[in-house]
Length: 301
Image (cartoon, rainbow, N blue to C red; front, side, top):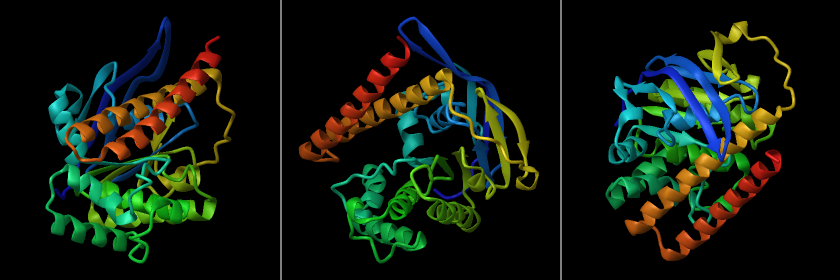
């Protein structure tokens, strides 16, 4: 499924509700990304960047507003169509690599193709080709624990490309990496964007990473304040997140983990993973979810 996708966000509003408390993460956000463009969305922690990626990626629905990908309003798609969209039309790279620890690099890259029903020989060849493309041809039989952070993120990028989606989204893809490795990963996105012609949206708080994009949209308090070219970028001081921004960050993480749990349940129901794998990943996700919920309750006291 090669090709490119135009992305248009119209008046996106996202309100997180926990009990009687409401936190507004996106406030009437508008964004247009051209087909084949590499766009950075830059802003401080808690500005709504991850919420935006979750909505464009079909992980969560906005409270109001629309997202058009190639003219299709994905916010109105029924769940069955949304699963197909997430599997075939979009690839997402997360900050924490999202790899299955018990699988090798090549098996992690194959996983999206297993879920998409790609035959064994074809997916094996494609996984090898993608790992070579991201510079990991020599590490394909290593497990995540045997790889460096930069190598793990390269595996995650290869996995996002597995089903050849026209749209690639990256949520703080260098957040866990040192500055040298971060630049290598940023340059890899740039090269893949040019070589494969994919539309790419990278959200980041790191302005050195944002500079590799064709254009940079600044996000502040849940809305796009301006869109510029890298040459116009000025230094922005990073300030400690406010209470509101911290709550938004935690709510974004919570939504992502809940979506991962639902995906895991579907994989188990379809017998795509073993019961042991399910228990290990489910326990880990539930633990993370509890940590976030505990922190949220502490902030809301």
